Image 1 (tube, rainbow, N blue to C red):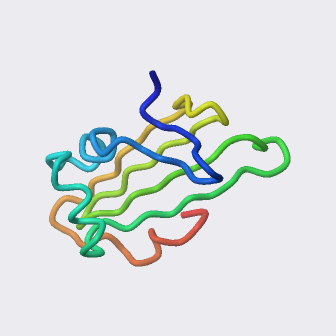
Image 2 (image 1 turned 135 degrees about the horizontal axis):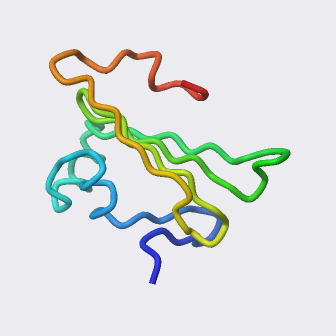
Length: 96
């Protein structure tokens, strides 16, 4: 079973995936999202990337990114940690 599903034109991602990627307890993910402390960006692929999605999550000084196919299979995963520096606001924009 995949931890990323497409439901009604929306992608549903298990909090464990996000928590592990951002380095926080998965049970805290929903609350941090409601509080606006975890933000996200979803980009749909075009041209040669049609059928793929890039999902990016931001929390404090970390960025967690997944590239998935239409079936929810993870193609690429990366985490960027800025350590003691705040995440630049430009990192919250598409293409960053």
